[in-house]
Length: 52
Image (cartoon, rainbow, N blue to C red; front, side):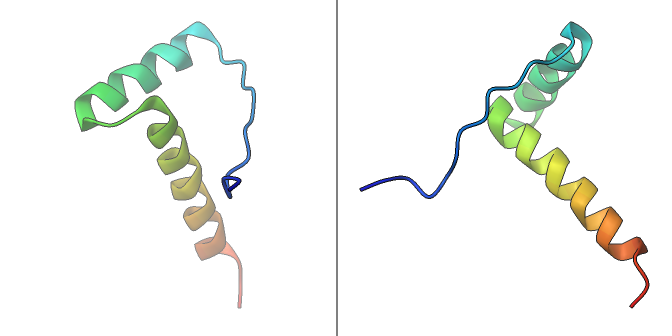
């Protein structure tokens, strides 16, 4: 059975990679989960700004 998730190769500047690693450790989760959380937070903020 195939996973419903798609893979993405991502290149990050060292400072951003370090920040993600630190946040993941602080929150007890994976770096992948931290990236997903950050992108979803951004999506939510943008959706809240759009007029209805």
